[in-house]
Image 1 (cartoon, rainbow, N blue to C red):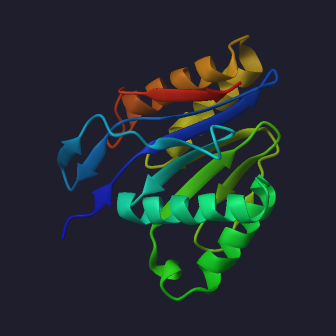
Image 2 (image 1 turned 135 degrees about the vertical axis):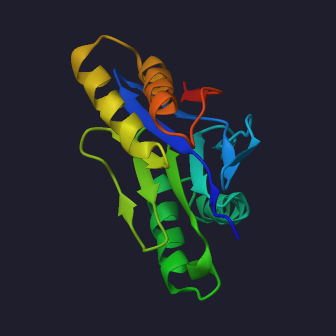
Image 3 (image 1 turned 45 degrees about the vertical axis):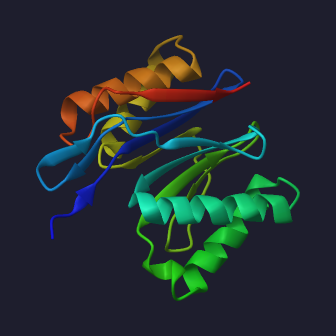
Length: 178
């Protein structure tokens, strides 16, 4: 069975703004199955942004659980993320899920993985997925050496990743928290 490869997600906090973006490509083996997938979701009545990479079905299951944890813990992103990571690591069924999440509110930017990681970046930039390393490098350079806004850095970083990674396209969706 060919491996399903999907995506590049990039998040940047800069100049008091937070933006998350993703490309639209979903690839199965050497075939682009979908070019316009939407991998960024608004949660908690629009107060939280989440982006996912990996298996779409697994990511949706994790997003539902994360949103439930947000409700359980009064909208606290760090607490919801920590509780989801604990469940993800210890629950036998959840451990099999193959996806990663980036979640953000106005104060927090976190990466969640199935190994129990909850990572807050020191430079306010996170990237996951096939083109993540390219997008991360581009965003770090743009943040340090330009006056671009967070959404503009995200878009430019994803465009650069799309030029380099065969599993990433330039059909980009960028969302910002106001």
